[in-house]
Image (cartoon, rainbow, N blue to C red; front, side):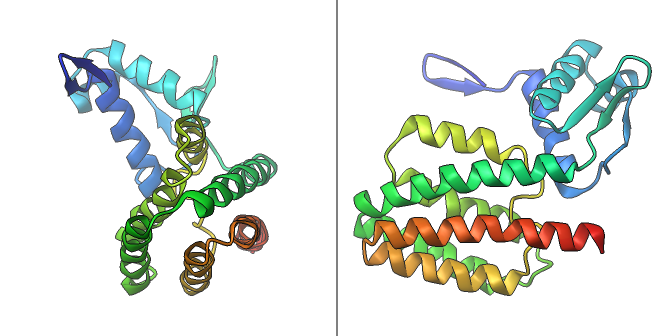
Length: 213
């Protein structure tokens, strides 16, 4: 994204990148799908240059893989890599949540509770679940009042196109979100950090069970 005199606009490369990222997240582009530059350029009605830019950016995010002989494809899920990503996420998210518990305001809590309830009211297969889960967690990260940490979290979440909660049962997420909000309301930074670490690391077992099963 770029800005001129306070106005924000998206380049063609930004638009293609964001659209492809969302298509991968929704499962419209399955792992292993070949991404032909000419076909994508026609689809998005752009020249090949924004498409090449988008594919390079998505490759840097781990969403696209490139082979000199086979071209670009939607990256397949590597269990070891995803487990490592979840462990990094657990460490950073527990740090962000602990800081948030120390700095959170009543207004912050009200906003977080609204997102918690909206998430809980959704059925497991509701398309809104992924975005509400993201909004819930990022509203907590914002309370840490650390722009650097928030930027790192945004980058890390891109390693999970469907969200870090993709493998976890919806009801379990609802219950753990409620426990986390209670810890934040109590301003218990240690307990809040522990809860979110367990929440993230718990996804590893669910991921392995669903992938193997």
